[in-house]
Length: 324
Image: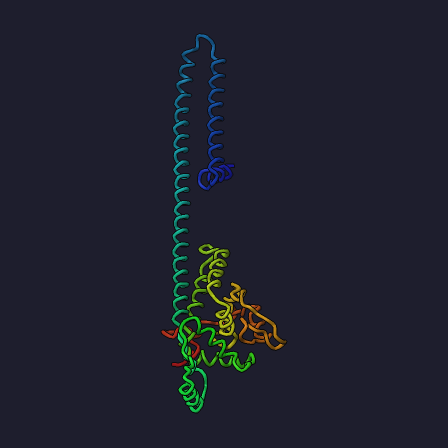
């Protein structure tokens, strides 16, 4: 009984989150106490007969002190309860303020990354003559023709037109899906300065969204941020993003997992031309196997990511783990 009473008091005065319930309980306790006092007083008035008023006065004086003690104790309890309620409300306001500040900091960082994304896209540079494997004779003939025809062939591009030109290069001569991937891999391996930093920043933007715990950024807000990021990408950018994250092209699949998680290719135009060709953004052909890679995420849970040479190289797999 004593344990149950203690638990009830703890729930009421310490863990209570319902202010109205607490106020109602305290009011009931006070009413019951007052009724008991009135009852005892009325009983004693009825019992004491005339001539025994001295005894009644002694009784009344003896009862009055405990009454005042009870009222003092009750007032103290009410004061403590009110203070606890005020502290709880202050703590809630502090938590709301802290959450708002965290959200603001995350959003500022996120939109800074988006701003950087646009700056990188606008500063892209491409010189087709460096990536097209033309022989010296072909280059000389092109220059000769340009000279006599008074026509200048444009090979250098800056900004977002770079995406269009790379896609045109990848799809030239009706390139098959395999040739498209081979050409893009060559660009990434031998001319990484063209698009490497663009896709690394895009990857970091998705990692920023995905890395926060759910109590900091809710799943709904993660989807919202990913949707905002996706809306910044043109169909040509999405087509290159598709090729960039295919198996064996850029990374081991971490980037592709994020694309799948947040449906980043949702607005990529895809048209079936034949069983062996699905046209992306009206430019390059990919096959069914490539499309299937974006159906399910790769499970990395059973892999040991600690076996890296580490140091300044981090998780660079090009350096043997046991180099020493």
